[in-house]
Length: 258
Length: 327
Ligand SMILES: Cc1cc2nc3c(=O)[nH]c(=O)nc-3n(C[C@H](O)[C@H](O)[C@H](O)COP(=O)(O)OP(=O)(O)OC[C@H]3O[C@@H](n4cnc5c(N)ncnc54)[C@H](O)[C@@H]3O)c2cc1C
Ligand SMILES: Nc1ncnc2c1ncn2[C@@H]1O[C@H](COP(=O)(O)O)[C@@H](O)[C@H]1O
Image (tube, rainbow over all chains, first blue to last red; front, top):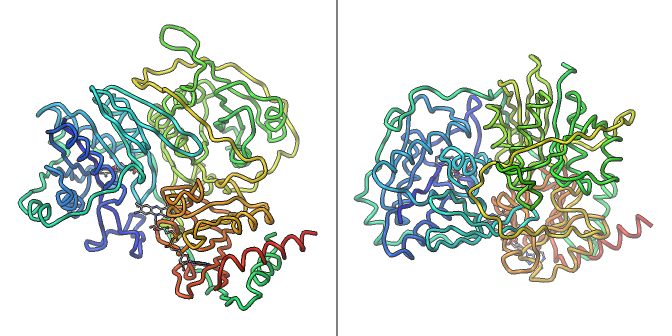
């Protein structure tokens, strides 16, 4: 079983996130592996463990400062880490990202079959939740997204998919693309043994031409503006001494919210 | 540019959702409004389309490559929805496609844009025409802390729009909505759909993602959601929860960046600490109210009004006052 997990380096949601020149501000020490991709890594490791043998490759499209995401993936137990960086991919949108990820998967396939590509349910910076579907379309493989339960047996992937107010049972033959939700599993923690093993691992850096992409992808949208929202005025705090509920009701009524 | 044609996805077409009415309202400001339906349009729904100025409905009639009619649940899979939308854009020579911001609709939007080489904006909180006549989408990002805007530079623009982006309003004058069948060939899916279940919507309470008021309960309820439900019912509000409360099995839907994103007029969080993951799904609300027994609770940093106290005391009293006020 050979699995590629796509991972993204994003600003930590616990820090003060923002924009610079309409691009997400990247500060080297305030970024992390997109937390939701830990669920993807976990799903991949579990499937390989259940199969008894195989390889898990973490793949990211990012500038070199995105390597901490791959190093975190090493600490969780992935075998290899590949980063695709190139000037022509700077400012890549969903389509360009999916195309680059797909091209890198194809290069990995030239070394040997890739049974599954597993992604997180969303990148916590943009919360698009569209790259997995687009990646399926680029690769011409079925994409089963937003899985909260995953099973692989006899070359068939089956999932329970939950979204909005819908629950679906879907299956598809491998090779396929899978995205898992944050409830699909409980990601493991890096332990001493894995951290030591991770130290010896090197990120493999590929350029666009290494994966057969020669020209910058067509631009479809242009950022116009990014501005911080004004701070909320300080909250009105009432300590309940028996009248707290009345105060709450009064707040709603005087602000014409009832 | 008033000769623009704007397509709106109408799914379901058997009952009208507030999100669809909001999209029609936005679409009317941009051009001529047409809807795309995946099934037969209900009589009451048709009356709403007429009131909201929807000129025509493209009603998809799906068939497989061999020409057999497809009427199953597959029609709602993103790839199939996208095939219908792309076909409708080509036939109507449409300029803009609007969808709600549900997970399934986002995927359908992405595949539609891919098929049409169109620009895509996900989770727009507003859609307008820019100075140069191009479509501009605004977004509130990073847990509601930044406002961004972005213009689509391709001929066709595809956008998913957040709930509560506008207050739905009927057209100045109703129109006579035409229904036209739209033949759509279902693409090769490579996927087997064994079952699809849609959770029934409760008749007495608005759905979480569309409600104007949301009351959410967290771990601080200790499993008793009765006071949360009571206040919500007094306000005609939807009920939500934190992810921890859902994991405990106390409620079924949670607010947050991996759950439902809400941006109501009023959000009331009771026994919820205000973790960044939770904030990500509610911080764009207009008024944020919290009830929490811990004076240091992080949610107080982002709220407008808060009561420091036991939610089992505060919520029932508030509910009673509101019922009295409403008479
Ligand atoms: C990848 C990932 C994604 C996540 N996504 C989400 C998400 O989308 N949405 C989400 O909500 N969470 C999400 N979480 C979980 C999130 O990090 C928090 O753990 C969760 O929101 C906390 O829930 P809570 O506020 O109910 O509980 P707690 O943090 O335990 O807070 C309970 C609060 O109740 C107060 N309280 C206790 N007793 C009373 C009382 N009697 N009266 C009044 N107040 C009382 C306490 O003072 C405390 O502030 C996610 C976590 C991860 C790792
Ligand atoms: N630049 C990227 N590099 C690697 N994986 C990505 C990238 N962008 C998105 N992904 C993957 O796609 C998932 C969904 O991302 P998104 O559609 O951007 O919300 C993430 O959880 C990642 O697994």
